[in-house]
Image 1 (cartoon, rainbow, N blue to C red):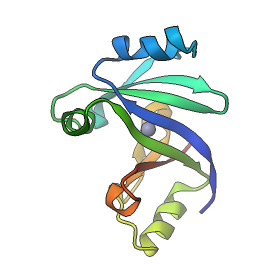
Image 2 (spheres, rainbow, N blue to C red):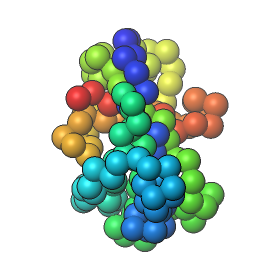
Image 3 (tube, protein in one colour):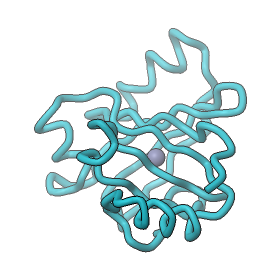
Length: 133
Ligand code: ZN
């Protein structure tokens, strides 16, 4: 498996319009617009930082994964995403190493990326996303 870089940090917010004020108004990061990914019941907003990005996540439904996360832990840091060269290969390798996958097969995320999540129980409590663009 080849990890190329940290692609983005995912941050759960109650509301992107409110949530983005810290990232864009205070820190001065450029807001690149938002995108709703219906399959994941989430609206995302990206703020590039050098070669990586900050991704804000707002749930579009009370039963979506981001809404459930906020209900349990409150808003804040939710996941780290690593960009990999070949996501199918990476998932196969992790599975062989005994890591439980939330997504056995990649699905389509924001920006058309291929993404898959690993179970936090097997990563020291951190929700890890792999993505290939
Ligand atoms: Zn993400």
